Length: 446
Length: 39
Image (cartoon, rainbow over the protein chains, first blue to last red):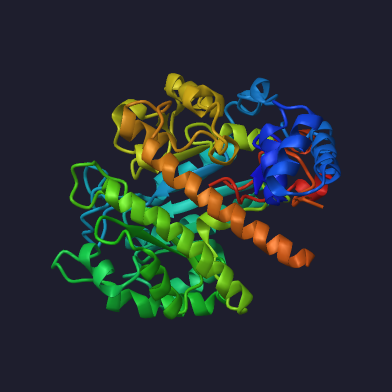
């Protein structure tokens, strides 16, 4: 497989073509034919034919494409300056579980417990509409803590948004992230009527899940939440949801947790590495990372096998679209945190994203006064794939867009830093995703 | 045939219709809602 970084082209090649592409820019047609025909015992004419194919691909911009995108960096953000299209509403800075690995410190974000009032939430929705410019599709995530601890406000805010969206020619797309404890028939009906997607927290095997995801009495939550998740997913027709698990030092062999979720009937899956300090007992060690890399490869093989058996499932990070996917502007500029996407605390404060909430120096302003800390907004606006010297020669840069600003900040102290352990995992996931999609496309060709 | 190209469009071509900003907030899999309209 050959991936051309700047054209995005993916080529399936045999061994001879692979070697030839590797020497194409250093050797002449005759030198390559001489060397490869001797090494592979094939006629020179075949090597020359392959050389001509490579030359054509280069001429059509599908191989050795130069990086001409840098002038575009920042262009999208500058021409949409001040436009906000997505908010993460922290409707509850409290939680009914006490997960020790929680990046949000059990939902409190290192602050006070609080629930968002309807008035603050309503103002946030008005702020979004007022600042969304010509954007039609607006996104609102109900997040926490545990958002269902403030379900009445979630319902009222959804109703309010629906009552004003047509008047403003907008389309609200809601999502809900929940630990499942408070799911009941009313929540299921509401979620299936109003939520475009639901994110359900489940770590996989019961003993793994219950190791961290416990209530304040120390009791595991697996047996309580799994039947509720199953009812919710069944009621959604098995679509527009995903299970989000976290793997830690306790389970770098997370493929076993994926298999558990499949056995439970869930097919839209995500497993994410824990985000914590290196000193935390749940942090992944170097040895763990080696296991995780192997698990990603085995996961891809399992997906390929089940697809062929007619029992496919989805893994969040492998849903690559080689034929389409995001445009180059989006690939350069990343997720939009701090510019078009912001998190709102229960008090109405604005932060660049949910992982910056509580970091006072990154407070952008509030839904009442707008963005007042323009220096932080500008810092995020200039944060693109070309802002990091380390990314310039990386083959994955137009897939990762320079990586997660929050991970970079927490690892290096700068949003322009590079969180190297994240790079290693990301590149492995991209390799697996591209391999999976390439194998599917080639099977369709046969 | 020793080389099979698996995707026809290039990223350079996506610059022509790109940048509408209507797509959903790991980037590789995010299908642009306006791509078909733009074509």
